[in-house]
Length: 183
Image (cartoon, rainbow, N blue to C red):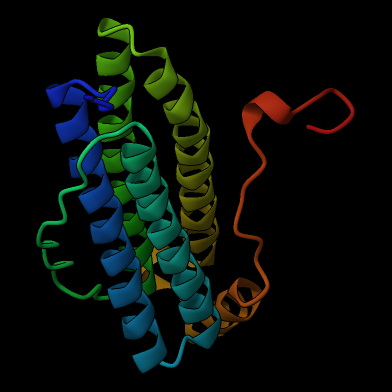
């Protein structure tokens, strides 16, 4: 008896996204290693935590494909690309990666809607919210780096940023959660 409840196109898209999440984990891992090598232990810690979060996202896709009766296809992960040249560059690259990931998530949402696969559409809503958080967090960090001087940030500002990043929460306050009393 056939138990697969994913169309071939959605199964492919979900497998591709699983690989993309693994790739994003590698990007965060590479940037965390770069930051540690430069002595930015707080930034490194933050990025290592996000590498782990991306691996968890990969596993969510893997488990979903299996639970829907689909076939998981594990493929090679692309290299993360060149190391950042600065803290500013690092977080610009993080933001760019998150925006690209959001576009891929939206493609799957649109595909699931077009195919009327409401289970997949519902599954993907968690990722829609997660990507909103990830983009907001990256934008907030870029704003802090801009205030610190951006590409021209002084060592003292980077030291303070690094110290703050060691304890920075891994999520961001979203616009939909804002109220008059809690903007």
